Length: 370
Image 1 (tube, rainbow, N blue to C red):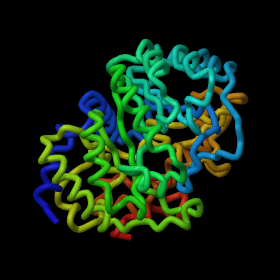
Image 2: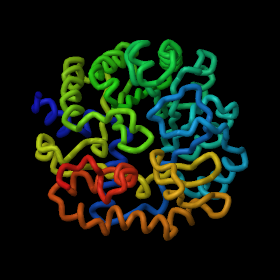
Image 3: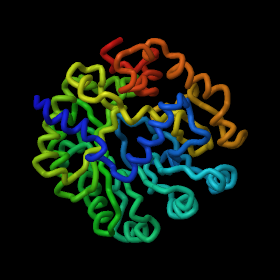
């Protein structure tokens, strides 16, 4: 394993990652840490699930494709009139299901986009025709992007993780976006099914001329029991191979690897970075709104026990400051004695809230100190 590559990457994290976003986010998080702030006055990152519908059936997906619910125009107007007009978040993203299955998506984008600096859409890109991409390019600007899920580098590897034969459609969709000057970010969910060819996905990203790529961890929960979760060391070794590609290509496709997804307890990593510029955003700076108005801390926590309230009954600001959410924050962060006294606390800040909650323990199960 090339430790120099890892050190070069993590120590230069600001320079290698999302330039416009990272500076603002790191500033916010550093100010929160410096001043012991547990949450912001309002969320700066808001996700909105606009549909449950999806044309894929991925085994590891947290979204529920068994229902065909969509967000109503009234709820979108509610979010705008009762929150966004007074509180402008840094970023708003649309998610699903597959957002482009919602026939009102362009109307939704046009309504929401004026209230944030960055607007993004999380899609599988399989439905994005050239005409659709052209229409989208007239709404989005240089700060905005489409995040595309891509877990394989060819038809066979794609099907093994996404459970469908739509690889060509996805690649066509990505090309349509890029040809219409829309920024594309590829997101790859790391599983045992694609671990051995992650660098080939990175090669494909270079070939497609996308701007950025991220590698997301697969959280340990009942939903993905059938899918073997790669060990932290296995992921770390494979990331080393990806970094070789990164440096040999002179960083042609920027890698977005937020430290929240990194196993800081690993002895190889713990001395590379003194202090992380990021903390888990769930409930501190971010939330997600379901199509029915229910608020959750993050996309991995769509469960009744993490239901923080509903916009039909309370305003978003009221929900953001309610007792249920305050208790969740205290239990995981400020009163979490298992983590606060840890030597790596300043690096991970208790790690991932969803990972801890889904595994029914008090800390991120990827931690090697506990």
